[in-house]
Image: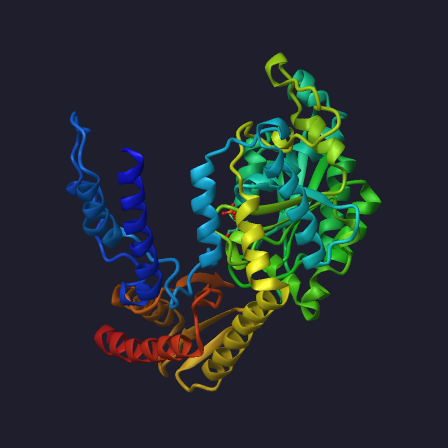
Length: 475
Ligand SMILES: Cc1ncc(COP(=O)(O)O)c(C=O)c1O
């Protein structure tokens, strides 16, 4: 493709992008395709001959777009959002064009120095104490893995890095029963073993019980095992539970255990001074992660990973072959050793665009707006005769179920599962579920960039209509 063709196609693509974002509401939120349907329309083998870009773009529109779930749809209320924004998309276009591999300072000084500054801005924005420094990782899963590996090395005095696990004894890690599945995955990868992850009971508000945590740690220490780290969650995925950071921090402090804080979703709400209650006790934390790619209008992937002792992190990952040695190596930050991959995307650019283009105040207003919308709808649900609020909103997530009279618990579970499928098959909105104390619960999360009050109102209208229809059909 020559420059003139590139320019022409790029203009077409930008027009498509702008139209898409303007009209994303017209698509079904969740892709309405059956398993294998898209694959069945793709050739088994790659083309031998070059194909014209017009055709490729045409197939993108006719084949790929209908098979997409539209995460930027204003009625996406499922999972946690991966929200984005136009300034972020512009930055991603530039990042793709520069196509820089920012593994070390030398390979793009601006990328490294902007990343350092953006992490500094984010720290100020979310109210983390001085002393936390960080890097951008692809996901919270990766960031937590890095934290666990650094914690393991701190406990073993870097012996595992040298000699492996054979003489290391039994390591243990701790989280609550509500913790995200990525923690268990990371514990498996780190060689600690799933059986040595203690999932501690939660209280009625879904926060970890610090006394049960203390007892589990004491029992492990008494048995000669080696506690590596505690992962505390702010904003659990199922129901927005919060571990009591101060109490957990005090336990970690008493036992000298690394405390990692997973605030993947809720961290963005720390922009709001009135939500800082959740980080009371954060001075005990050794590491902290939150995802601007969830709720800070910044394209996936962008996970902000802070540590208090970067030297421990770097020592965990450091490896310096001759070909990576540089003249300024000692004087600059080289993010290659702040995590698993050597190669790094230029992710700081989109944060820079987003933060400057909205201003912190604009970002605050949008997040506050989401919280208000969730609170208002939850109040409506609570006041509705046929529905039950199973988990009141904390930040912008709440859980509910349809509860017509005269149905037993199993019938209610089945009716709500049918309702969820009917809602998602309608294409009008997208919701996901969890279980609360065994009960099937529908989650509702507000956090899409383009969501306005009317979208929430219409979503509730659809849920009510489909609840009645599916209940009638199920009888
Ligand atoms: C609390 C929590 N932690 C971690 C994760 C994993 O995030 P990521 O996809 O960035 O690895 C999620 C994902 O939703 C989450 O809700």
